[in-house]
Length: 111
Length: 114
Image (cartoon, rainbow over all chains, first blue to last red; front, side, top):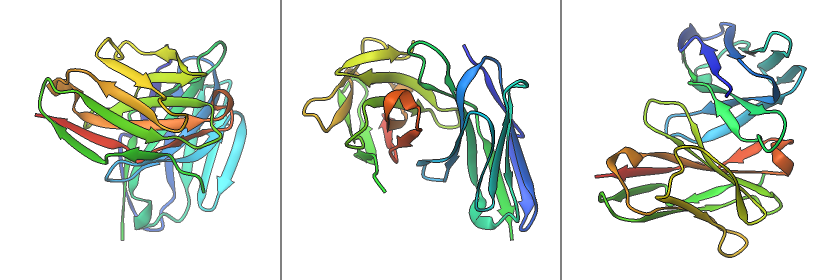
């Protein structure tokens, strides 16, 4: 069973700051996902990673498979980035292709 | 961009009643999932469905739960006799082959059992 830990649980930043959210997991995976959840609850996929680094606009996601660790960075943060950011992992092998979720990081960006 | 559609967005039901949550997955996706999120907690896996049968289910998915793909487009989650602790946000998701190219989530159904 994979355990997914995120830190910090809560993060408050000022507009323009550089944000880092961390995720670690306990068992080998086939892919790691970063997801965004806004108030009201809908879940939106941001990134899927199996190695290296991906960038989309002001968002950057990295993963270190050997260390079982991933980070999500937001450059030049903006109040509209305020949301819960969730790390989720997809298992490897067999029929284990469901996602296991972390508890999420609540990000608040103040103007 | 293709979407996963869930209905209703909110449902209030009395304890002991049956509820059916509906989902329309992305049309060319093969795998379908239900997840739930109790208020303030993390999202939890309930069940995955492929080729018209359950491929995996969690300990949460006991005999009061069932899933069905009745007509080739809808994917439903039935809770037979709701309990207070079934109150949660229920998310449907779909994916291509084993989720290898990612997952698309619906907006969720907020179920409140009173």
